[in-house]
Image 1: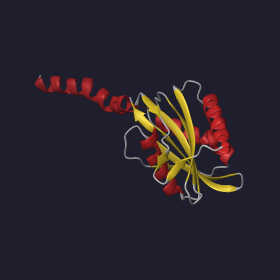
Image 2: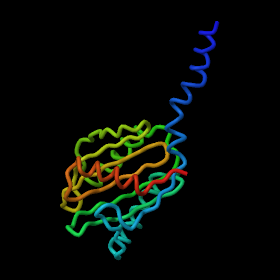
Image 3: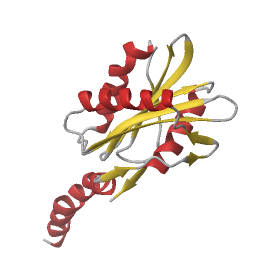
Image 4: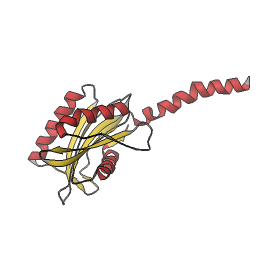
Length: 177
């Protein structure tokens, strides 16, 4: 009888806690773009501001139920750029949301095959693909978790370096409420 009771408690409490933990750890979330991330500086020139407005409008139109949207253009002194844009809000299926977001961006950035990037965090998923934008080679990476979804467009970086940088940006931009 004791064994049945313990098994019942494990099934009734343990399973929901196991599957629900990433949700309550990752949602709700807010986003704030810092002025500096690693060697990247947030750009505030007119061209960057125009890009930010366009990206935010595009993200808002694609994700009508998002809590909030954000976008920013970062650059290094050496000319590498990282453009990041996304949303905060609840995502029940972050793995498929990451795949869908990168698929949505495929025609805009002429992306090749998506590659899954391991994150080692339950509920957090990342994908990247190589493409082109305005005649320049780019890497586009997307992350999704239960509280946020965002993409980064990187120039002059490898796919692996872009994926790592997206993780760094995520840690500096997204905070959990």
